[in-house]
Length: 164
Image 1: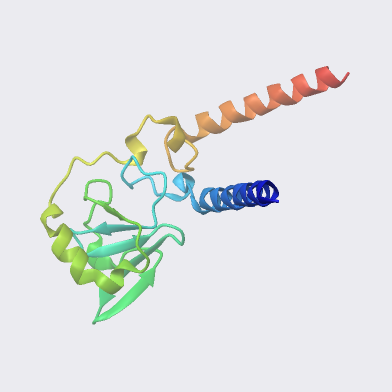
Image 2 (image 1 turned 135 degrees about the vertical axis):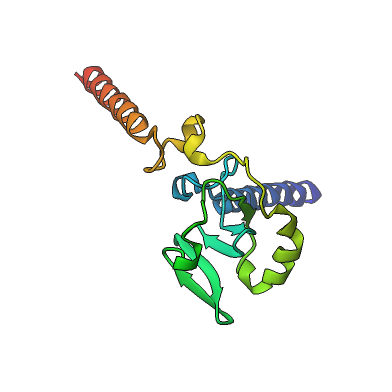
């Protein structure tokens, strides 16, 4: 009887472990294709960028800038005119994967204020890493798309030949 209970317990714990592992894998999200080409390289997942030079956040999933105007947080698809001279490709971006970081803006201002004026951060547009080629604004995007389509065509032909 004890052996049966032990075996049942081990089997159940194995199922529980597998479902827990599956949940962890599902939660991991890669959003390289959603990142803007002016974003820094090296991140598989990004929720927000913080730009200390102009004290602005950028929400990657919705492609929205978040900035303060008259004491209120504004959400917009483009930066306001006062930032026309800001170069997104040269300015330093900090990756933040916390929810609603603009609600704790003071924390980020003090933590990353020393990054103001820093340049030299490699951006996705200039990267030769093929994983970024899927981004439609990347200079290598058309080459990547054509290569992938050719590969898919080859695979389709091979599949047809195997089935004939």
